[in-house]
Length: 394
Image 1: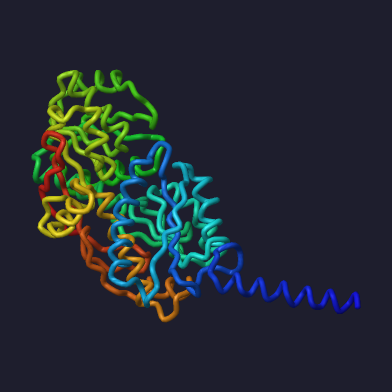
Image 2: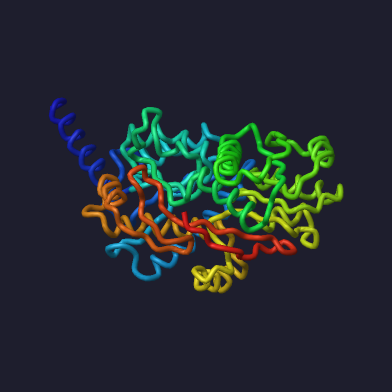
């Protein structure tokens, strides 16, 4: 009798476990399939902390894309469900969240993080669990490549990488802005800034020998007083500043430069794509003669329909991170549609199939290192409003 009771109990437990797995509860198991009523996509983003603005803006675009797809019937009759978690702008937390999404939440793929460092932290998780991570804005050159030069098999991105920004920034400064004497300011605490600055310098040295970098200065993320740096700059003759730094430092740097009477053009990279946050610090009336390379411009002919949609749905102008989020979600959902089976393996295979994607930030296919071959947009801030200047092909 005792043995029979144990046998019955084991049968009941096995039945319960199977029932729960079939419901797609996302609590344990192998994960990464769509056996339930929804298709789960993990979202690992910086929703609080130092760079929360990037994560928040990207998620805004992601949600809009998912709402559209679900309103149209979903994918294979299944609604898309976002499992969204906040990595608090911390790389260690980003890794922990990637682990949770990969092992507990039954997701087919993970979108995000927004920054390079946080995305890099997820690489061991992607390899161990064989699940794709796709970032919209992790731009470091080596993000998708291992130290031995081979590809990181499960890391993908839909944005151009840092050296592309540095190259196009240098060419635009020299050719379109007529710069001859440049001050270079970079943030020595992050690879993003240093990588773009390196590419900018190399491009000028190789292609624009008549353009001189007359002074180089370094800042550190978290600094708030740039008076010493700006005083050093005022002591030299220059006609523009190139500062590929994040928005928080950029806003303070620009405000303090203008307050000191430095009215030369200032150019940055996609870290400048945060009009509202930067405008609050600088003041819209003083937020002029500032340029940046980015992924999107509301005035770009390619983005007219998306801009109108955003204004209709959210009653505001979209920025580059909104657009990247929108494209990121659509890119992954289209991979889910193409997948031969709705599993993490099927989605990963679809991401590798060489399909061309057309979005609001450009049309592209991925190269052998999972990088998109796509154009770059140059914007100018005019009274705090990013204004389309040019779309530059790679």
